[in-house]
Image 1 (tube, rainbow, N blue to C red):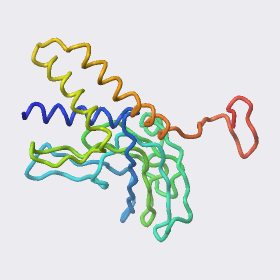
Image 2: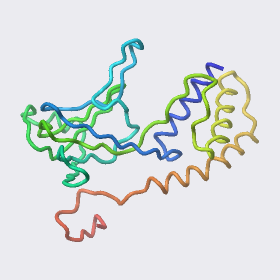
Image 3: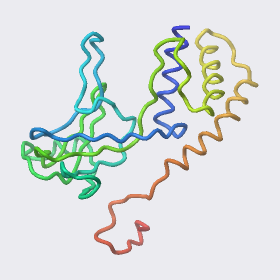
Image 4: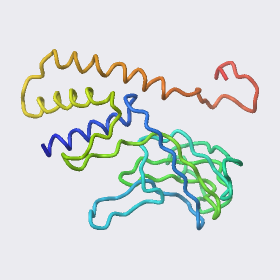
Length: 213
């Protein structure tokens, strides 16, 4: 049962990075000092003294980062251009602080880093939006907390994984049943996750033929 619980959490984590789950991630951090980067997530390598990042919840993906005034209540939002960690390290001088115009994301685990250029000045806030992971089950007796429509998909997929883990053949009927249950959830997740296409071809507000915007 312990192996089944671990495997179930692993399956749910996989759902969080594909179109079978579209769980909203929306977290804000306000800089109390100048920050070259912020950390997302919690390090449980020492379970007695876990280390929380600047934002304790780690996203499964980041779609948008918005810069805000500390006193902002939804006004003065400045979307930052999202770039790669390698692009950040290509800057000749990195230890400068002002109003950032770009954010640079790495893929570290368990603490993910988001760098800013220029660095994030004290008093400014950033809002990070994307998708998040499911909350893990810790014990067999934990109540069911997933969406009701996920129940069949979860237990059917868990059954196929456990059969394979213990060297048993997976019945074709079980696979067909799993595909039939999951296809509607995947289709809805794809639609829910669709956004306007972004590209680097536009400049200003003019129409761009190649970018389609």
